[in-house]
Length: 114
Image 1 (cartoon, rainbow, N blue to C red):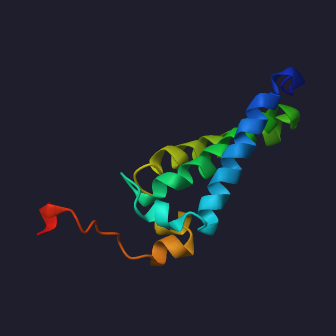
Image 2: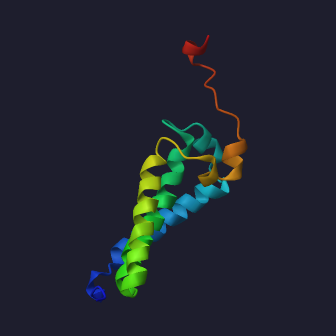
């Protein structure tokens, strides 16, 4: 049995697309200086990408056949989990190359490292 199409939400689709666009800007490295200085983690700025993908999959799943909707919701759940974990850490496979190759940023005014 397919989900009713009235579960589809245009506002959620637009918010998800905005999150994906914001995450893609970070993925390309356009805001590299900001990302490398982020607290608690540089991967925090990649979280919107994964959360947006989760939102897109969850929003579009009512329009798909039941078997595909189930797969989309499982992928959305995985993308959501990655997005939440991205606030503090991501494995190297899920980071863009420029972030993997970047040296760890050190605050030159931090007195704890002296």
